[in-house]
Length: 320
Image 1: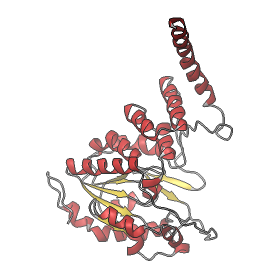
Image 2: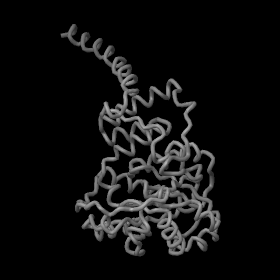
Image 3: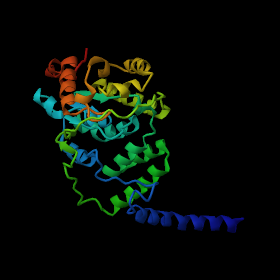
Image 4: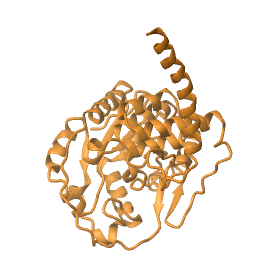
């Protein structure tokens, strides 16, 4: 029996480094070939560029959080026009699990007076794999990412995290530079991504989607709200505009609204604005620049940011 246990132990000692070596070389294989590892350095949401730039931002007036609807929906230039120093910390498909990681890393330095947090039914029922891969690939990796990976518990996340640690150890990303413009998008200083003008074609039927609160996402969201309150940071939850078909694909929007209102100040702009699907969107879930202009200026007017932020004090702001 002892001989058997020793054999198992020796096998494990050999297997672990072998797996790490395998993952390292497997990581260089094109994603189309491999399905269980997806290292997306310099991904389309410009998270790498955003997280390089965030290190230069401190003591902002407004911090934006959320998914691609955040970094494509809150144009920091518009808020800057009103005199508000802001940064957009959104990321693709960001769920509360990833929001919590980013806040633990950057909230203290950013030290916002107001947080605008983009919320929607999707962020509460997806598993968070896509957004986890984005953060693992484009930010530092530490205990925060390990805890996130354990919470998601998905083989693709584990493999990608191990590969990312290997790249970090060997300093393979030190010379990486992400271009700030491609054929579709342009990265704007402050974390916003502007979409080039494109016609929206409403030729896809939307299926009804079931709204289910994922327990882990809900728990992380509650932790985030508690963090805001503990640090005395005012916050607003915002359901950004989507096309009519996309919005109506969720039959439980009223339930979602009721749920969000229990957490604090909440605005559903799908009810507050009557945007045109063809004129104000470039796909079912994202505003084009014309839509962003209308939405942002209405948001500024609605929450009266001018008055709130002008009343700066050492104790913070109070949203009525």
